[in-house]
Length: 244
Image (cartoon, rainbow, N blue to C red; front, side, top):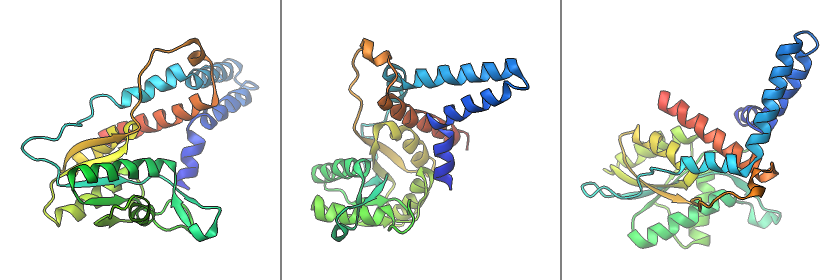
């Protein structure tokens, strides 16, 4: 239910619903309805422009703590789950989605460089599927030949990723960690993990490669709305965590 509500509230669906609401209001409150309709349409068009939505996403990736603190270097790697998919071949079962695979690849590379143990974190996101963390653990072993020492299978969001993972690691005497997730998600993840008292070093995957916008970047497109969805979701989530 939570995921359905988020989808309805976020662009482009959320803005389309506001446009429809504005059109309905025009029958009784013409001026108010017209203003709401135009404001939502303009916001929808702007967010579909890669120059706008990409800029919002890139801003999330600045100022991340990617250098380990000299006095308290990381002792473990935490990799956050995203999505899982059911393979067409039933023999393969449930597999990591593309976002989750990206994070697992980065975590496996980091583990080979550092030799640090890995914790995978992620609860159940879909009915009739195992927890994301269980799928991640299997993929790390089978696809990347890298074992996960700890599995955190109960979290439903980033805040719980942090709380539940920190509890597991504190019992092992671990106070400093690498956190692996997408660069656009990292700002919110760092805030959540820092709130648990852990020292966090960011190990982001899929960092944006900044370039100057071209004319095509000011034309709305589907990829722009997808980027805008991630950007707004993260900025709203970051503000909510900051206010907690």
